[in-house]
Image (tube, rainbow, N blue to C red; front, side, top):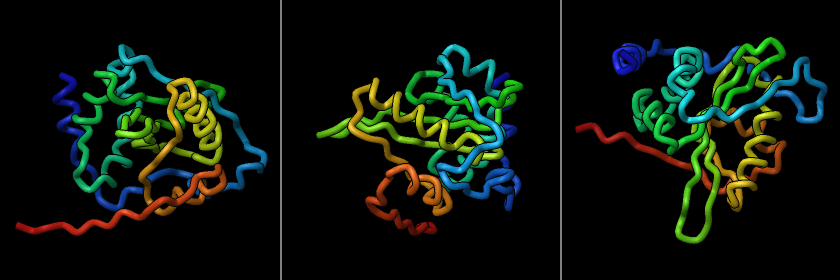
Length: 173
């Protein structure tokens, strides 16, 4: 049943906005709402999937075919990636993210793989703070993210440094 739902949701309409209310605020500006940010235990991913998949779908679409919703779902249910939720005071899911602990030959990093949702100014700072605490607990040396240009407006305010730029060229066969 879940695989049928995943396959059905693979098709995404073009030109879909990444989020509602995605105007970047200053990190120190007062927020309308503060959010509770929670990491979802692996055994709860299946139950929450119907509620979070649309917000992740917009981010997965921007991976240019590197990821599908089905593969992301499997990564979360097997524990390869962690699912995070940003809940408002009424327990509505405004934000969804996934992270992955990456072990490089010389260091361990927490990678922000996907992030999406609505009203990001109300929860972006909360989730970045939780990511940092989680990275420290997991003995990571830092946090990394590959993201679209617009995310730099948030990340640059949180002491992230731009390390490199990724270029890609599609090869047509």
